[in-house]
Amino acid sequence: MREYELKYGCNPHQKPARIFREDEELPITVCNGKPGYINLLDALNAWQLVRELKEATGLPAAASFKHVSPAGAAIGLPLSEGMKQAYHVSGLALSPLASAYARARGADRMSSYGDFIALSDVCDKEAAALIGKEVSDGIVAPGYEEEALSILKGKRKGEYTILAMDPGYKPPGRERKTVFGIEFEQERNDWKIERSLLNTVVTVNKVIPEENVRDLLVALITLKYTQSNSVCYALEGQTIGVGAGQQSRLHCTRLAGDKADRWFLRQHPQVLALPFLPEMGRTDKDNVIDLYVSGYSREVMAEGFWQRYFSRRPGELTEEDQKAWLTGLRDVSLGSDAFFPFEDNIWRAAASGVRYIAQPGGSIRDRQVVECCDSLGITMATTGLRLFHH
Image 1 (cartoon, one colour):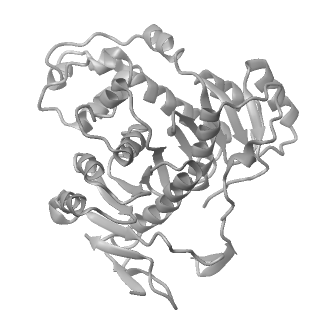
Image 2 (cartoon, rainbow, N blue to C red):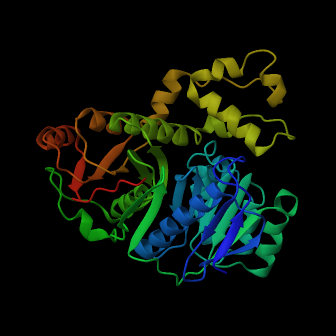
Image 3 (cartoon, rainbow, N blue to C red):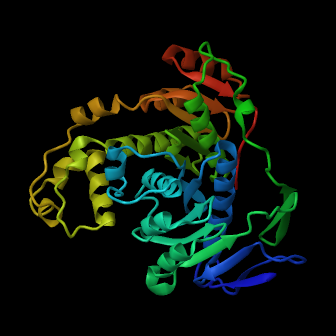
């Protein structure tokens, strides 16, 4: 098949819409559902991300995409009991691939609502069972086990979008797009992100532990497919905060840091013990938890509110409680798709436990940024590689 008609373009009134290749077959097969324009943009970007994560780490990878940027990305490392609770996967059988998706979805569960999923490996029944419990628009993977395909086809009243990607597909070296009737062409960004990118360490501290090397690679590969400007915080083989598409790099750093803080606060014992009513669904829980950890716990406890969601009135998560808990967020790795022009980014990153940074370098204020890292005990590598993506 060289052409596939989409249900519509970016918006329902933008018809007709299609994907096509002029001289060769499409490398993607629609196994179920009717994908839209944005679905395919998410699928193709997310597929590249998980394929590169798998290649860089040797572990199964997953991504949760929304509006052509990742809400989360991860590799298949085991989850702690606290993480399982925070990610709503306690009691579920978790293969490495399922663990990767639980982590990717759990990075920012509110942003992942209605996501498009990418898996690096053939979707197994454990991953499908987990995905079956989440609100999602579709999935792309290199293939599906028979039982997994059956589970996924049952989503969205049988209309869940399921795509199979040819894992051997290699795109042309140049890519094109049309904007306002004008053709753009450029070389594909096929630069391989690997350990050698982190060899130039410019701070007094020179040592980057292997687990942080892994996390920096996760962050940088994620940034390669994130709308710029972008900054990514990573820990334990997954993103924990992605700041995408901001005009100011400091705003990227703040946005991603705030998300990282909320990710960690979701694992606070008081949050894990919230007495939700048994009929509460995952989405409502996520929304209430986000309010609770974002400084609104007093409002959550107000009469008329807590009775809608809880079996009893919960205690307040005070500002002092939050500050004390966040001191435990440590050894976070951070990637930036372009240089830091000012040291304010470093101060904000350090407030969310960042101790390892990878960024291209090349600012006229590089020396100030390095000195700031040294004053905070942060190790920083300059990659020389900008990763803008539009």
